[in-house]
Length: 226
Picture: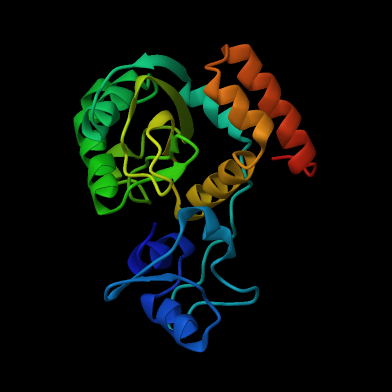
């Protein structure tokens, strides 16, 4: 679940724009006490078509070409038997296991990812979590390539997911720009709606099987290509 501030930052509009749309009934969220929360899986549906930033806001740059999830995973890697019995320990392990992250950058990157997780769980249900740092990534980590790491836990861990199921599979998103992050997140969430991929992931498949299924699904769901 995302806050107004996170939605505004990731969609590159002002908080005022988000609140105005809420008041008009053009934007749907969930009221939690005095705060608004927005399901992460509905991120691409939050703003109606044609909505633009409030007057005075910087114009958004043209969105980058959407990368295929299979290509991002080629960079971030597929990792098995990740240890840890709490979300904090698991997140530290996955950062350390991501080879494209220089060792010197790992402590700070873990801190950024844990700070994001502490705001609200990235568990999206179906035993899957999608942790990530706030975007854009802090300046010291801009040398890290955009990637997605796929991790299979040695034992399921309670991430406080919306469906109360413990998490056994994580996708770590490390994208440099807000629009790039949003596009990759949207593409990944769409893929994870497919039973064929979900069932495969929960079988802890070989890397080749994961790659083949992603190639097949992305060809069907996104025929325009990455």
